[in-house]
Image (cartoon, rainbow, N blue to C red; front, side, top):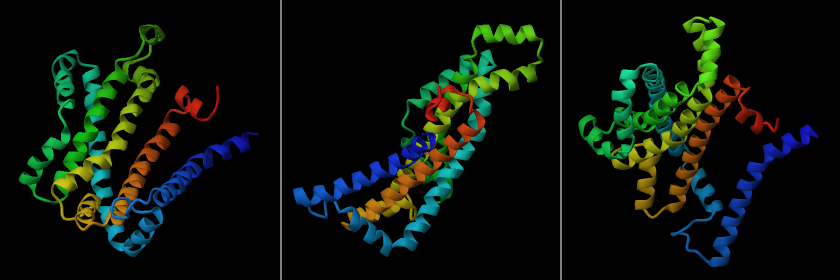
Length: 260
């Protein structure tokens, strides 16, 4: 029974995705949609196969920007969120500032950074960093300050030291909320890289989409879009795997596995 359930969960998404592709292919035939407006999935596959080397090279470029920006955001945002959670002064000063900056579209900074730093890797990494930084730091603060008063009193009653209480109680209690920020940032990291490439770049999948649409080749543009989707899914999958390994006891993970 369990094997059947696991198999069903494993094939559910591939079958659903295959169904979407079939519906896409059939809808173009039924509604006679011109290929310059919406190409068939088979046409996208043929076009991508003919341009595989360039697509792979640009995927590496966009993937590098995405991973570097996400990694830097994680290294900077998590300690800052921890510091804000344990400092009343930072919660009154830095935290409101971060909340205000979160409301500003990060992509608005892209033309400025590109004008300062050129079309290279650095401005794209900075944009990805900004896109990922705020959800990570804000969710980290929420996670570390959300420890219940009862659990705080219990920790004090056990006589556990500061570091022991942190690693045994406060950190595990905060990790589920932290992973909300990690996953949200992972989903949007490639978005930041792509839009930065739209604004100013000479390589990458965003640049490739821009050139393809300018040349009236939507089939090539959709091929790049599929690769961006795979890149985003890969990032999200890695973070989800880390979540399952680090907090397998959390109720969200138990429900995903179908356990009560």
